[in-house]
Length: 499
Image (tube, rainbow, N blue to C red):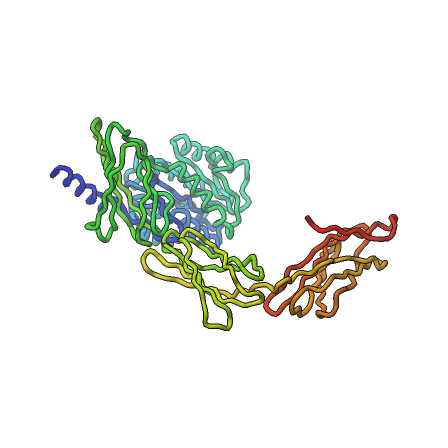
């Protein structure tokens, strides 16, 4: 018992000292990466101040989700200029705040674009203890260039790749494709990008995923991170017969609130739920084997900010006695929804209870041609509530145009006629979508049940829709396709209802 307590204490101390908290942001944190990332930054006079600032923003966006530290990701910058310069060593900044500030503070050096010299310099620093590089971790080089270099890059770049460095190239100018595709790691479609400097955010996620393929560590890490849960994944270490796992997790600011779960040796994943939004958790997985000793695996995971719902409310599929209410998003942190609805004006209202996993419901037994106020309230597991309201209208009884028909009037003109819709119609809207030429919209009074449609060339097929208008909303429209006969055929028309 004493030995187990000592082991658990050691694990928590290791967590407290060995990892920095991942950065908070829109992107979920990535805790299962370990590698040295070197940016080869064009700092020469051929790059404008605006382009240089955009590239710095891109560099930070690219690495922001990673966890930084001696067992995670380390990064550095080498300037391409007349003489290559290292902005800071790999091991200087071990937190996201430090890395972000260091990138923001990086200043353009100007000078010549001696990329070949910078690559030779990078080869020395990538494997130098003095530069903070680590000997046994993957190496990634990200070269952002405007496409020009005043010296040869082929030989020093090949030496880097021969030493195991994975090379990604982002060209923001008119670089030579054949030269850059030969310089990048293979295949070029995964390691080479051509993009305007203003469009760098478009490739950020794709490039980060390709980098993660290189530096992803086979160890305990979190995926599917939400505001209230994450799924832990780890390599297969035990089996059902050889032992079990002890999983421990607690908020960083309250390690005394540690929770422990025992899992069979057959597990390689587990979902931790009912967590607090925007909170960093320390996690330790202790393999208990009766065959071999496996050291504990640790990670640190930050839950996302709580999604606010309902943020969108949609009323659809309205009929005289019902309509559908839909909302979004539907986060896991919501236990249930309440849908309150009542006619306007009026003091009466009814309440529907909806499960927290659903995003819609149908409100029924309503009065026709009536405006309702609908309020959807999300009941969070934490006890908080958030509401959003919208107006919804039921349709008039029998609010549909009937018997839409056509008469050829000659000179590319048709007469469209229809029978009156039921209820207190305020007017009709007739829309003609021509196969050639612009569409038209005609509004007529409720006493008029026909219109002339002109400029319908022979041989064309056109769509005509008639819709009754009521006080609160439009009724159901009736549409037909009408084909104008070619001039060589007998004068007339054909019409068919769209299936």
